[in-house]
Length: 125
Figure 1 (cartoon, one colour):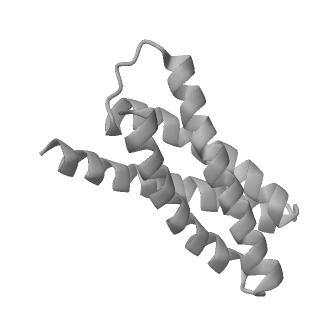
Figure 2 (cartoon, rainbow, N blue to C red):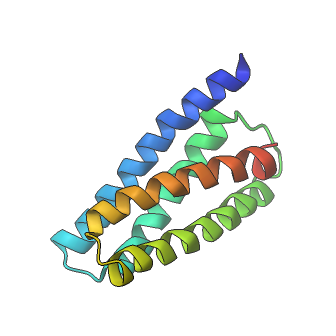
């Protein structure tokens, strides 16, 4: 079934997106010593760019001629989930004093679910 294939590919590319996000975050926050919130924004940007390309081409197989509108909706949805991402990172690290890498992994799972719903219902409908 198309939904099974689509969901499978979303999970696969979601996992790749997750790794892009976590690796970029780790490089900026740990290796380069940049503030975790700034590192989080940089990781978000690279993971969203990767996700748009893979979601458009392989997951939802979009053939929309209006790429700018589609890309705008995609990034708009990701801005929302990026705000959720950053707010949860702040909550988990500064308020709840959980570890930053642990927090990043938990938050990314939440964000991946939000992104699928938004992509399925709004961007690539």
